Length: 337
Image (cartoon, one colour):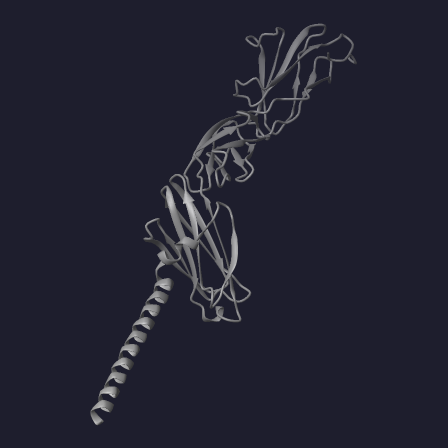
């Protein structure tokens, strides 16, 4: 009888041990599966939703939903800008290639309940499929306090060419506006920064491309892309002297006339020409200071035609002159015509 009881107890103990061992193996397998779900991206990659270019997705991470996966498809090699924003105290951004190899990982810290932290990454990606994983490591994000994040991506299309258009000449003390044609049309940033080679002769607004001329000279205007591409274009502008204008002639004596005109900005002086012939080859000249805008001619004969011209500056060969034909009548009160 004792042997039977002993044998029965032994069998019960053996069965209990087998059952206990099976329970341990089952729990271990489940534990391994859970760890695999949490740590191996391949277990959940099939649930990754495709993120479209320029599409922004906003959602939450919590204790029961602590990570998210997204898929992006690149058709051709491009510089891709990925923007991530989160109010979690600490969250992690990960980028994987199609073979699930980790390309980039960034821990984003500093978020608070009402304040988000931004993270932006520019990376060159070849054609293919890529996966983004976002997970939180913030204890406060679990349970009651959910952490909000948003993610998007876009292509950084660099400027490839710049063409400057506008007037190629401008007079002193005048302004012109230059424009820049940026290619390609879908460039991410088309902003242009303007500069001029000689600031003593002209200045240009760095943002608008409006140039103001000060001195007669050739200046080079440079239009530069601000997107980091290094693209730029050069445009030459010729600054011409201002033309003499509002020329007037008045008789001041029996054989005298007074010539007046408007001052020319930044002129170095004036040249007053007069003669009996239209050609200037035999004309007489008078130098007039740049501070003056009048000149007197004497020994003018009555009833004779004279050609009077004013040029500025005195040494310039540019056609920046104004001229009149004058004839004095015998009467002192006669007008100059």
